Image (cartoon, rainbow over the protein chains, first blue to last red):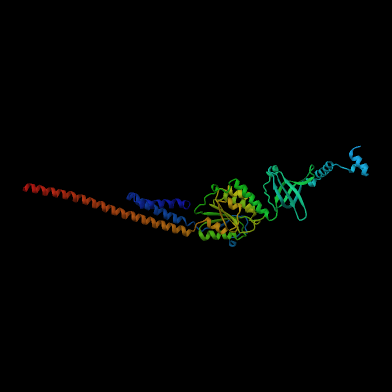
Length: 68
Length: 338
């Protein structure tokens, strides 16, 4: 999800535009609205990647985390 | 008796010591040609009286504190030499001493020119810049787009410098979740180019990092030499993953920076360009959600109003029909009474 952040947020922006124009059936509007809400939730969750580890990939063992 | 013998007899000089101009010039020329040290020599000096002929030959003098020598760079050699020269440049010339018999002049025929002194690094950099620019390596069409939110970043820099701390702090302050991989590389000295290119190759070929950052703190042009190296520049250019450089201070321009997908002025700035601020992304999503809710509520309200209008229209239509019927009944009744 994080990889297509731009694409997904753009989809939501399009839904907002469509809703603002009003040229959509009630059923479709509700479906699009609910789908966008779910997508937003997923994007938010995807931003929490984890602990954000720092790894040293050198063979040189003298490079320790504390030094950074 | 030839002329030399006659003059020799008249002046009591052995004829073998008397030469024509041609003979003495040939003797000098042969001496020079047969002296190995003069046929492949290196001469250090400063360029003066620089002159370019219309045939593409370059003439100048090489001088030091007390002496001067004429030099000539023929156009066929000039085409093979990448170093450009200017008045006042300190250079090391490789060439051979040549004696021009017809005029009795001596000059240094140039085979190669090496810039030396303080201007050496600057010149090398400028020459490489011109070369790579000609090959269009700096063109925008080659710049790879950076991912909006990278999950993993590879850093190639020295473990001993401040740059590594600056890059990490900068990334972590903006998006602490991002995973960082570090590959140590010397950023100056003999090993620098090799280790920097190896580090970049490693992240490009053997890891799943989304972005590679390389850089170092500021320094003299000599300190930044590795980042003005052709091998490193070409490695950055051919790398499939996007590369950000954060080299030196604001005023430092490097070839690595010019060829990179994103050039920044410091290691801290490189970290900033690599990741967005997480709080900004979250705020952006909140704003988007608010807009979405507002748009949907507005849509529903409009729908409700539309329904009401439709309903009213319907009622009005029924009322209209009822009224017409009433009028007809009244008219019928009136007719019956009459």
